[in-house]
Length: 75
Image (cartoon, rainbow, N blue to C red):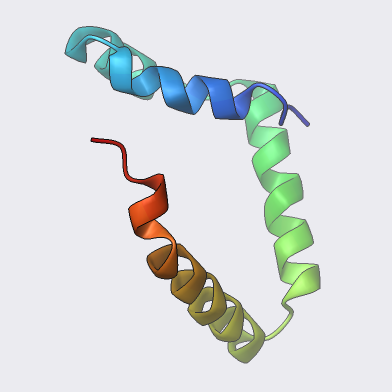
């Protein structure tokens, strides 16, 4: 799984010209990206096996994200 380059890649999105951003989001996923996604979904479903467990996770994370939203916001 490729995780170490994700934060930098996400930060770079703000500085991309619109045409380059569109090119990147329209390009097909690689086999590695598809496999990484499949593994993450499988892990998530094992970790939160029921709809109620998933809902509790989302509610907890949403509360965290909104509580700290002003810290992450860049002017």
